[in-house]
Length: 499
Image 1 (cartoon, one colour):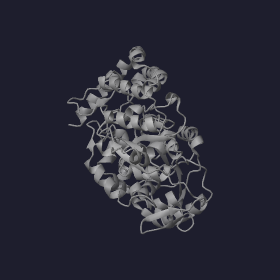
Image 2 (cartoon, helix red, strand yellow):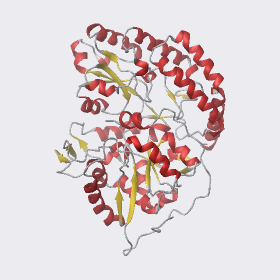
Image 3 (cartoon, one colour):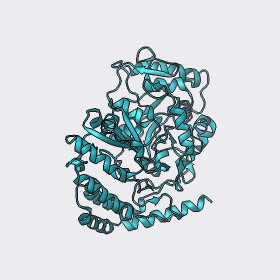
Image 4 (spheres, one colour):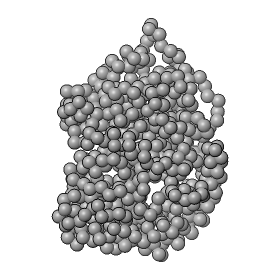
């Protein structure tokens, strides 16, 4: 299952708020008990890895650790302790760890919490460590490593995952074929009207379009809205505009038109009456046969990946134009906690292995061959159900392109993704990470307004002609214009450094 629906929907809140980067002096990277460089006589250093386990802690995690340690003892005189923190405990535990000094050598973070953690001086500056011990990370990420810079310094390394940008609609192939709908003729959002009408007329008990259940709004289906959200959506940069002017997306004519379109779909019955309060994940609806179409962040072979998890043959139609922005690159990152590591060099050595060592990264993700999966080809595996290690969270670790191809996945995925990543347009603001402490009170107030109005408007559940003006007035009273001005000031300063 792809990152946006499995991890981001469960792990990220919706705020996407960055805060100030800190310019404090950096301590020696070799703080703590282990020292700088291990010698042949030194006791192996134990590296503690922190990340959320999405299901139950795997029963065979100790056996997998033992095999990982066979690699790390030989290559870097270290052992590894994998996380036992489940998703339900993750937020609280992560915050407690970073606020204290509990041992943690590497920790997973995300673009929403990256800047705030740096502002609190919780992450180490990594540039020198990468230069000394992490060249494999630089080789794997290329210029995308620089996107993680805050005031010219890198404090976390992005996971090298599959390129995820733009929006795609996934529709059931059986129903398209049954009613003679040619998906290749769908060139934009307006072309969906006739398709949805056909499905509604012939399958009246079926939900035509799944409502949102996570941070990706339903306006993502509207192809005429194409903006860089500049990490939090409170002040955006329209892609394709000729200047670097930050605007309020909720006042854009394109947004107003999008609300009217969504309202028409709601009134036509394409969206369920409780769309604003949806509790079921879209992929679950598709798996249960309860919906005709869902939408996702676009990746190559997306339809095949989602078909594997839903059991439905799907047809993909790309809607919003793919434009790579900061949060696409910085979705998930790995950091070395300043106050929690005992040996930052060892942490970096291991982090480097997760970007370069295929055996290691597949052990972490899939466990032991013959016990947790079987090979059905040179690079293709089939997980063994109920095997004792079914974590399969490859979107969280190092270099995902080194992972095995799962049985049923298209073997050409990685090459196609490489070509897609190299060809996709990059936002003019990629690498810009705004800070928010100057407008923190306004952000809280604006978020309260968004919580009150946004979901109802963006699912068509209320009449935008009546409610949208009230929404805008409340946003302005809460201080959104002050937020826009602050972000514009920071963007202007960032642009000046890029010349």
